Length: 332
Image 1: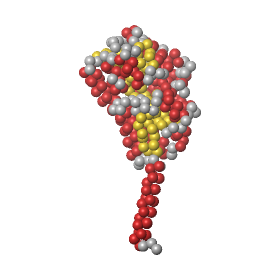
Image 2: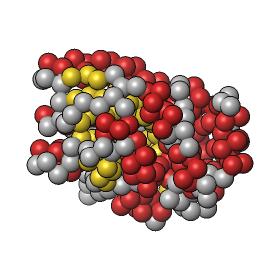
Image 3: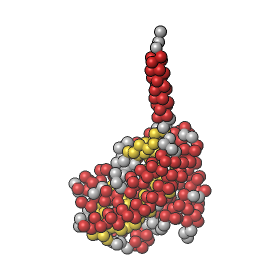
């Protein structure tokens, strides 16, 4: 016969087990999303990603939790994108130069010397043209979560000063392994040398390359200034990023969570704008203190040299696409 005390004890244990079981179920309901990107910890993009995660956790009341993988920890951009197409719970950073391998028209967002302000890029992101491109991308298994992130203004660190395109002759400059970036750098006067960002620093220190291009905080974060002492303010690309996920993964998420990802992502993009401004100034000061000379280039000369650059991609960006682009951003 069970005593009253024993009954009380067993009831207490049962209640504890029930409580623990409930908590485990709640924990299992948390949606964990891996966020993959190439930037180092502390760079503006890394800070903005973590702000995105904070906003998402707050807005979803803890239902969504980001797991961060900076410095290409999950592999190259190509490798991660392949993970997306098989339904992995990953969101990664991308841009038009890379996405044009899947939908050629996406390359227009990455064209050099086309966009003068971020507002022009945002007009494109809000346009029917961009929506059409995004729908095509979904048929390839990739989904645009949001796009209004300005990764930064891309400039160049080099081992010698250059103010016009012809001054870049003979310089091997690291670029992403993207056709558009390769042809862009060659058209600008240098010799494009594609490689992963993580390999650029040792290549520069060993003399394999003579410089690299990227937003200033990225060049600083990668310590490129230790091997290249001239910061060339080419401002060749205003780089808008798109965060992408696998279409299959997005379909598994509740619609309200997908909407939250879009809204909080755009909010974090505004946070990124402020971080970029601060980081640009700070990185320039620190590089100057380390012996780097800031060189203001003849941007008009570069822009003239690159005027016909889109014609190299007439198959990817036919005249009707370019005309729509110019109409959207108010050029020509």
